[in-house]
Amino acid sequence: MSEDQDLPPIPAEFEQFTPRTARVLVREGYRCLADVQAASDDELLKLRNFGYLSLAEVRAAGQ
Image 1 (cartoon, rainbow, N blue to C red):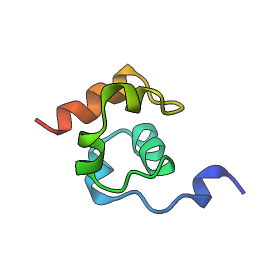
Image 2: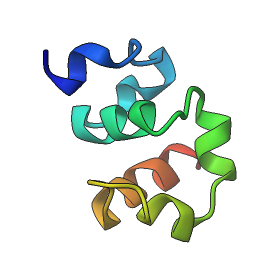
Image 3: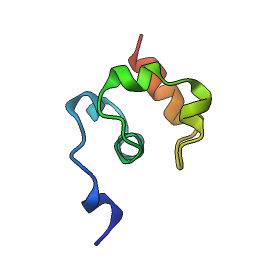
Image 4: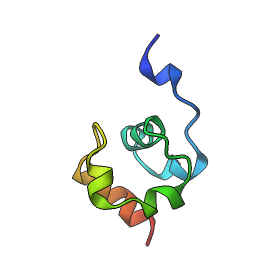
């Protein structure tokens, strides 16, 4: 069974992100956009497979 099959469904708020970014956020326990926006850049960049492009995606969503 792959890791993706073990994840909960992607929240509707995350559908604006690329699938990779959305999967990372869900895997790391983020369930709503407000939680992601409240996280610091350093906190998000420490997530596995979450880089500067993903960070730009989530920061743009909050504007």
